[in-house]
Every structure is written in structure tokens, then in C-alpha cells.
Length: 397
Image (cartoon, rainbow, N blue to C red; front, top):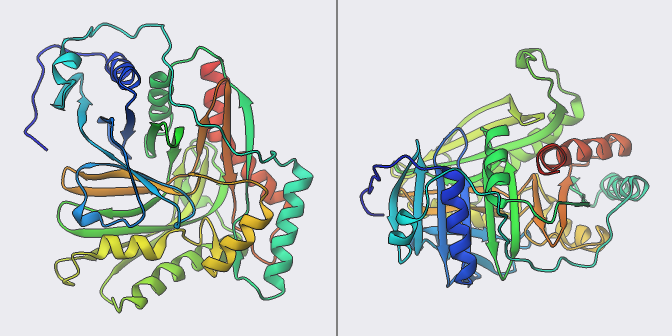
């Protein structure tokens, strides 16, 4: 990326994002907005030429935004950062592309109340599961696990809710960022994928500017009451076992490539919006281990992780495709910037929804073991769905 081009006039982030979205749609271009965890910088990338790819080689990619489906055999979408800017502290920087002059000259006053559209792609014809249907699916998973076919399965479901016809995508994105500052908040909108927005707590693969590889194991879910001392939160044996399975899965991936030099920290309790999880962090010095392709190799090994699919992976995916009753599409896939600031930051696409015409489809799931309680699994999905439902109900309506 080029050196920052600082603009002297303080600018409204909502207006800049609205203007960029308008330019994208007028040009029939795909676009992405994102805010990284614990950061105030808002990024925009747009392109008329998103690329469908099968094999991901992170080290060779041009700077852009990567959006991948749950099924690793399906095409991923790479959005080149042909149009690009960063908005931070009331200023634009790194403004690049054909729209640069237009963007910097467009109005900078407070956001207009005029709503803007987004790319729409029809969802699959699956039906939303009622509580009894989802609990039946959990019981199917339990029986398969008890029968020895699987160690763990992660069934999911979706819920569809009405959204106002006239709402503003940029303002929704900014509200999610305000409510969930420690999440990766993003919008991805293209003719190929439709429009997806979410606030995910789970990093999948990160390669930082110092050539250090990072990934995490996240499992277990409890409701979080603001102000609760995290040290006072206790976890059940089922939740601890579920977390240990994800940890062992990551370590088994390291073993497959004979990598033994890694740092492991955790598990510890972390806040993710209205819930808490158990989290363990892993880090590898890629230069010290002489493994410059580690990001690409581990991405291929990790996705889909046991936290969103099950163990063993291929058999779990086949079971879930047969029994969930709908296509996950990009839910529980991965997304994030590649080559921006000489880093790769990919996150699992959780706590997300797909926007249609007046309808939002929200997704959630949970890890099932042999001793899982179907009713509690339903309640866990309700907790997770509320991450976005609370914004729709209290902010958009």
C-alpha cells in the first residue's frame, strides 16, 4: 500500500462509508467494510473484478479481502483492494483507486438519512428449525457420537427476521462496531455472495508483520452479565472437554507438518459481546521455524475447524450436510483482509447474517458431545443469535 494521504478536513465516517457504498453499487462493484478487534480504524475495499479461487496461497495474493464458504471445496472470493481507504480519527488515509478524487471531494457533513441498497443473492430454500426440530438434530448428533462415529459434531440453524425496508448498511456496521469493540466487524457485499454482515469473536489465521503465525481455540458458551468478574466464572466438564478437543485439533495440525516449536497460552475466559467463551492462543515464529508458507498450510489444515464442523472433519461435514436441512453458504466459512499492512487476518464467519430484501437470515450453532443437553444447546444458539438480533430490534426498528 502507498504512504498515507492525510486529508485536512475532519470527516464523518458514516458519510464516507455511505458515499463509498453508493459508488460501489453505481459501478456494480463488490465491496467490503471491516474493523479489526480493539481498533478504531475502519477499512473499505472495492472492486469491479472480484475473483473466484479454489486454492488459497496467502503469500502470493494481492492486497484485498478474502471471503470463503463453509465447504472448503467451493470457490472462495478474493476482492482486490482496487478502491481503498482507511478512516480513523476523523480523517481518510491511504485513499487509492479511480474513486480517490471523487471520495475526497464528496460531502463530509453528517450522515444523510437516505438509505442505500446492497447486493442481494437469494438464499437456499431450507426451512428455519423450530426448537423441537433443532433438539431432534442435537439428539441425532448425540446418538452418532455415542455410537462411536464421531468425537464431536457442530449442528447449526438459522432464523429469519424482518428488517425495515429503509435502513442504512453503513450505520448498522458502525453500530455493531460500537457494541462489540473486541470483535472483527465486517460487511461483504458482491453479486456472487449477496450481502453478509457480522461481528465474529474467533480468529482463524493471522500472520503479522513480524512473520508470526497466530490461531486460537475457542469453545464453550455462557451468558455474560456486564460487570461480572471473569475469575468467578466456572465451566462445566462438558465445556472444558469441548475446549480441549479444539486445542487438540490445532496441535494435531501442527504435528501433521512436524512443527513442534509453538507457544500455547490458555485456556482463559474471554468476553464476546453478550456471552463468554474459553479461549487458548497459539503462536509460531515463522522465521525461527523457517516456515514462510505456514499461514497457507495451516489455513488448509484448520478449515473447517472442529469448533464449526466436528471430528473427524470430512465425515462430520457429510453428516451435517445431510441432516441440517439447509446450505450454510458462507456462514462458518472465513473472511478478512490479506496483504493489508503486510498482514493476513482471517476470522471464522460467526455471529453473522445474510441480508435479503426486507429479510435478514441469522445463523448460530454449538458443539455437541455425547452428554450434551438438547434444550441447553437450543438456548446456546438463542444467546448467539441475540448478538445481532439485539441490534436489529433496538437499533434498526
